[in-house]
Length: 349
Image 1 (cartoon, rainbow, N blue to C red):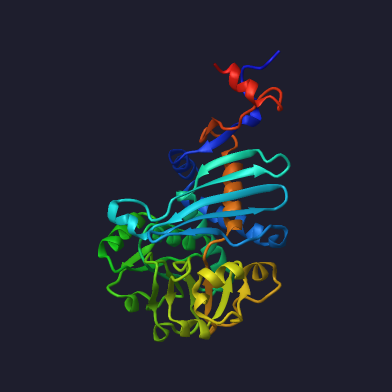
Image 2: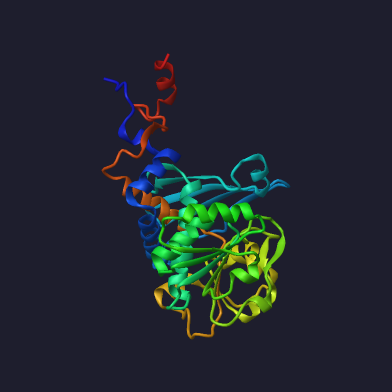
């Protein structure tokens, strides 16, 4: 007898924006950031087991749309993400995203989720995980240059993972800084609004740059950066967009996720193709040194990589267990006879 209902494999758990927010508040935002940092680090420790390819990008005059795929041989993931800096003029997000997990053995999806919020969380968690290995051990103060949608996540991740207690803020738009100050109230952080980038970096051991304009920019000049700091450069994420003067890179030990992607999209696109970099996974596994001394300038040239999204998607799937923070979507056509897809269509009349 033919079953009138789809099988369990046809039903895919979907996490909406509302349910993602419910999940984060259920767990606590700082808990999520700390646990995500650990999940991402665990996957960096098995970096060599993943398929790796630069993201597939479709560029236009308005922005970019990208696909970011990877697999560890058992689970496959991808993320769809855009970057449209002019969107804010129309009251729209600069970055939106969604992602999917699937079984490699069958190709069937096992999770579909929003990733606009999740990307902000995983980007901040990755920054903090890198800083755990690269920043000075006594770090207590960070600077956040660019106070847009990522700012609060970055500050709270550095607090949860690295123990910072002071955040110094600067943005060319004072309203963005005011927003960030208000949002961080109640999180047990000293938050200082600054009038310039130069003022903001005073006394900071971690300097994070995260601006949106897709152009070669100079947010930090060489004379602004003193010895011993860790620079977390996350704003440069596509060809033609950078934030740091190239002389800063010459003085720094530069750490990256996946060199073939970073040399196209990151700060090091300004440098020669053989400019020396260290892959972060090697630091995580102990195969390469991270911070060696108190005077060293470390620079995480982060553009975001698919393995980080893989980690975040798997984390969400695991954390959904035992909750109602998702809904099942009837996504996969599921005929009783896999050869009779047309018959299933006809019986639906």
